Amino acid sequence: MPIIPRANPKSSNASSLVFFSRLFFSRRTGMCRKCIGRNRRSILLIVTLYLLYGEFFSSCGPHSKYGFIETTACHKNALPREDWKTFKFGFNFLLNRPQRGGKRCFVSSKDEKTSGFCACDGYKVAGLRNCGDGVEIDCEKACREEITRSRSKDTRRRRCEKQLAGKEECPLKRVFEERPNGYENVMKNTKRMHAMFKKVVVKSMPTGFSFTLPRDRRRATLKRDFVLAGERLAKAQVEEIHGKTEAFVKNVEEEMNAMETNIEDYFENQRGIVIVGGSKYSIKTSYWIAVHAVRRAKSRLPIELWFPANELPSCEDIEDLRELGVIVRSFSELGDALNFASKGKRKPSRFAYKLLALTFSSFKETLSIDADNLVLKDPETKLFESNEYKTTGAVLWRDFWRDSSAPDARLALFGDENAPSWPKFTHESGQMLVDKRKHWNALFLALYFNAFDHIFYPLFGGFMGIGDKEVFAVALRYFNDDFFIVPHDPDHVGIRDGSNGNIFGNTMLHRDLHGDPLFLHANKGKMTNHVPYDADFSSSKYIRRWEESAFLGSKVVHVINEATGEHDFEKWIFDIVSKNKCKFGDASNAYYDILSEESGRGILLDGIYLNDYLENPGVWFLHRNLHS
Image (tube, rainbow, N blue to C red):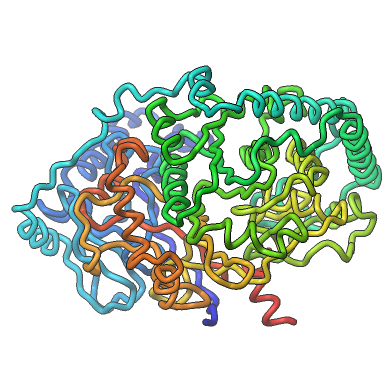
């Protein structure tokens, strides 16, 4: 299905509160203050009364205090254009309400460019509208009808505080005690291997790198992206990267050859899955769903769930995870992890955790998946038993994007900025399958890249791919190791924009080696536990995360359900979260979290348009199909 270039959305009117705050508090308005002179207090009083009137007295009526909330993507189920969390001044944040700048009470039927809904009192929703619906919306009237219709229903919020009371982080000593027999050796081996890695890094480059990169690459602008601006590293800097990388590889090989124990003996278990968790509520909900998805697929593979220091789950949750075949591990077991590389001056990127968990897990053969990545079928039969994996020992997947690496990265590592082994596409690290016995050298080189992420992340990818995505793939190619790239491009799954037909996507659908759907990676807008208390899945008002995709259109829903064997896989997710609502996440007082729970609609959708990035960095499968 073709993707049509999208027009830039019309910007919303600036909030009066933002305007006045800038007027009175900006550093650039010294002249204004002098002009105000003796009347400053009077003007401030007038402005304050105006703002109070707007906050407390101005409304669309007694049933619709907040009016029409305009949404992105020309879709009634997308996130609002003006998110209250970005509102820095005024009462909105403190009083837990949506931003009200540019509030609307009425939408004309002739308005073809407006989508959204009316936010009614009592966290009700009415007047839902996509762009081009040709529907006239009067928020006061719509809210009055909705409130009257639902008055008989019990809308009292069932909060989680009582169930969450006393669920503090489990002490590390207790975490160790909860593990199965034999994990004492696993922990000893983990510490010994990490100590060896640390020793090699310090020996190879005791002072780190002597330079920093010209500029950041985290935004798609020529002003910030030094590669797009055509800037290059100095010859001495390229030679420093080359020399220190070679020294590291040499020292790793020497240390490995000097080890008394075979590398295979450091890993106690044969096969397993590794996930990195965390205490943030969206990550917490995600990893619980991911674990249940693995077990729903009838997979018996053991799972190691790794947590950063001070982010461990409660002892009760650890018990429940153990019943699901999950072993909780902590990066505290690795000491200072990657922090030693900068001597404590720079905190390592959170992206680095994934490779640490993969490398130092107890499994010889490891499938690493992100916490927001859902397995649709048993990966053991689909991946571990495949001939391609058994032959090469590593399977990787493509991302959406074309290669955006710096020429100096290829020059420093391969001696040629047009190195033929460097791919023209990028890799997706949401899932990686590795036999560590075959690729230990590449894993340690990838850890080295992670230890100096401020150098290698920007060299390996631009703003749409910056992070850990490319480090293992680059390391494999550095050693000329055999590995397999799944030959199927990821599909872009989400909802369809009501104005131009493009997919506003929130999830990547990845396939196995033979083209069957295997992973759903929620790469935009994480799943949370703030699902509705009473949801009617047959209603058009309920927000479904997956409606259409770039490749399959509306058939994608059937494809997902068929792959999982579920009548409705999205309903399976809803049911598992509903049953464990207070376990999977914390209570929230955020306006839109409460709205999603009490309105019965569900969680508003975030997403991206692939066609926003046709040129920079470029969508790989579109570029390949259009320009091959």
